[in-house]
Structure formats: C-alpha cells, structure tokens
Length: 204
Image (tube, rainbow, N blue to C red; front, side):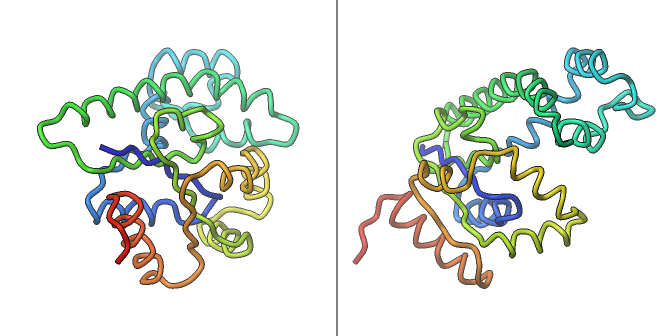
C-alpha cells in the first residue's frame, strides 16, 4: 500500500485530482475533514474560547470556522495562526495516523491511499507518505477559481502568504502534474501517473 501526499496551491484543483485518483482505485483521507472533527473536540473549543472569546462559537457552542479564519489570517496575526496550528495539528496527525493504520490492517487494503492535506509539508505530515504529488496551476487561474468560490483577492493572497512557497512544495514533491487545461487532459495525465508512477508499470 502506497501512501501518496497531495499538495498544491490554493484552488489548484487538489480535490479534483483526489476524486480522479479515487475513481482509479485509491482511498482518500482528507486532512481538512480531520481538522473539522478536531474543532468539535471540547478540549480544543475550550482553548480557543479562552484565547478568543465566545464570539467564535455558534448558538450550539460549535466553532464558526470563518470567524476563526478572520482572526488567524488577519494581517499581522501570525502568532494567532501558529497558536491554532500548535493546538490542532498534533490532534489531526493522530487522527490521520489512526485512519492509515486501520486501512493498512483491513483485509484488502487499497493499492494507494491519498492524503489530501494542503499543509502537508508545513505540518510535517509528509513523513507519513511514501511519495508526494504536487498539483500545479497558474496563479491567475487559481485566483479566478478562488473568486468564483466567493473569496476576495485579499483573502486569497493572505492564505497563500501563510503557506510554504509553492516552488518549494513543487521541489520537495516526487510527482508534479499540471492542471491548467481540460478535465479530460488532467484525467489522462493522472491515468498515466497511476499506471507508470504509482503502480510501477513500465512504459511500453
């Protein structure tokens, strides 16, 4: 069983790539979903409200992620972002590790497990992976996609600035795929990547 980390810039198409790899036979673990689970942990909620107050909670006492994002991605608030990461990342890693072990011990483990984690390198979760795939897409295209999702250009820039430079992510990855053309093109690229890079089949 090969564990494949999945990284890329904001709105580069990581979810699309994960879905295509799932269609090819991979099981996908989503670090963002694990993060959502961690934010429901009463101990985490207690730490967050102790620092930021109850304004970050909805009427049911659950964390409002967009309110947290306003705090941690505000200009000059790097200390708040680091606080959040130091609180949540170890818990997220523990969840991911547990899920990977459960899959590995299953009667028929999949050939590939994709770990979809935007902060894979920043959090050190690449150590859980055998290989890392980087999804490359031009900045103007990624910004266009982000705006279509309701982001502002300022939000896009702030989120991107908080992450490792994309050039470094690409350099540290084993495989780079370009997602700047048609859906069928990226499907074809990933089919070949699956066959020749992940399954170990030789080119003809």
